[in-house]
Image 1 (cartoon, one colour):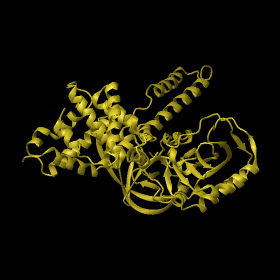
Image 2 (image 1 turned 90 degrees about the vertical axis):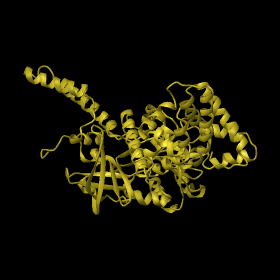
Image 3 (image 1 turned 180 degrees about the horizontal axis):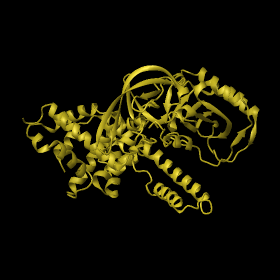
Image 4 (image 1 turned 180 degrees about the vertical axis):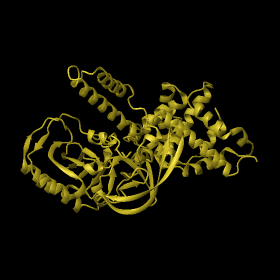
Length: 184
Length: 336
């Protein structure tokens, strides 16, 4: 079923819209959540909470693209869950963010660049990448996917995934340097 | 958790998140996959040859040992990635930029008879995973057969003098005319005479293999030509034959594209579906347009057919048969 059909069902308060959303995006939302909370049980709850949030938001909202809207909700709920559990294990979201931090040096950036501005720069930087490397970056650092999962999804070896991500992080650093965001 | 970085990543646009979320699995026929099959084929072939040639025929012990060594080496060293200098040009330079488009290597050489007119110079680039370096080289681009150049081109490298085919990355037709034009369908795509008529609701239960009849493929060519304005749709459950509808399944192949055992399916409710495009594509042409085709099929008649393999998944890229594999691993020429 198309996204607009799902939205139409939700607009007329038809619960079938939620079933269709689950059918279409359930697997994606569950895996995104699990990448962060690292627990099947918590991920399933986050996924269900996402549909509840969708039900409450539509109408009046008409999210387009629906996939990104659902992913944002699922990610926020999963992060909230992670904070609640104060999980300090070096798993899930921690490792990808550490990789990125190491490459661009957040401690230094944080002193004179707010997160929103950095986010806009990262978004612009992603426009300079080809589609595959952009998807790889977003899947790793936004969806927090493990490299083995990315290797399978992109038809690459895990080693190649690491190398590509490493190159992209270097390019990002170079891009930020060019944009003058670091202290001289 | 790094909240600062996490907040920053939250600024990534919806389009990019959707792009990553909705991205299809990449099932490209990578060099390693081709090479894996090639190595196995070579190892098995070598083993068979030496087993047959074994014992009484090879009297010389040294020759026998050498033969065994070849087999063992082939079997043991299955497919390490080639070093940069050992690769052919299309293995080195997998990506081509030409006329503002990106093309990817198909892994195939283009035969001399298939190379057409020269289109101009281009840059090709490749990545050496051993040294983590990106290389770029100049090359010349040519047409291939009667394919349109924004779909498939041949690329000649000065480095080894060979010509290879490259296909436009992520190409997806706008409509049926675009699809048939770019592929030059009538010339480049062969419709097999094995045609199956079945019901979409229960494909395995009631399949009929139609008697050989040239009228059916010819009607398909005419149908594709006549319905050029039909928009191309992604191959999803929304864009394919509905349950209970009868479908005609044609096997299609394209030697020039090195694509075999693909399908083109036409449903009685007016959908044309094929996996000739890597991700699968569907066109809705309407019931009326396909009516004559099904009438011809009904008149043709056939015999009950028991399938030996499942219907192919349109999003799969099919591993080509051993002809292509052996070509990738052909013996180096004497000049080299």
